[in-house]
Amino acid sequence: MTIEQKTAIEKEVESLKAKLTGDMFQDMETRDKIHNLEMQLKGVKPIDSHFDCFGCGS
Image 1 (spheres, rainbow, N blue to C red):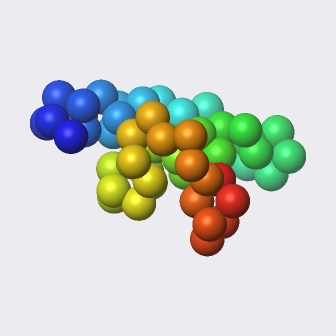
Image 2: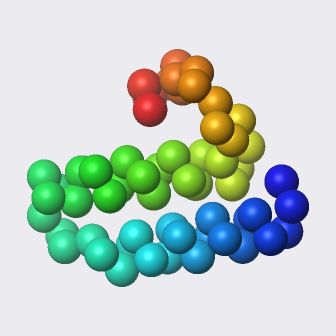
C-alpha cells in the first residue's frame, strides 16, 4: 500500500466517522464500511479481496 492510498483511506474513514448519528441501526452500514477500511489499513484483509474475514464475517 502506498502512502497516497493509505492517506486516501484514512480520509475516507474520517469522512464516514463524521456521518455517524449514534443510532446503531442507522449507522450499521457506515460502521461496516469503516471497519472494512480499517482492516485494509492494518493489513488484516487484502485490498479488493473477495475473501471474507473468518474472525468477524466482514
